[in-house]
Image (cartoon, rainbow, N blue to C red; front, side, top):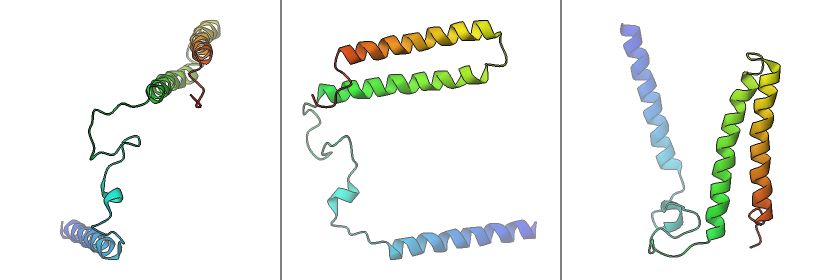
Length: 117
């Protein structure tokens, strides 16, 4: 019991010393406004929240989120490869990837993948 208490106090002491040293040795200045303000997609958080922003930026973000979720759905497909019948797995995988490719083709035709808009 005493050993656990000693280790706990030692860890607390070391962590407090490290935090104190980081505060002393950091090069932060109180007058640096940019480092103290949050960064939100290039907008100044101190200005009005109702300024218009690029619709293209929003659509690129939605496309990224959609493909990010689809990647999260592809990973379990890899792990189930050995658990189910190969023919069923192949049909499901081809169907899912076809939906992805059709969506990608549609976005390409709508010029949503061009950054110079």
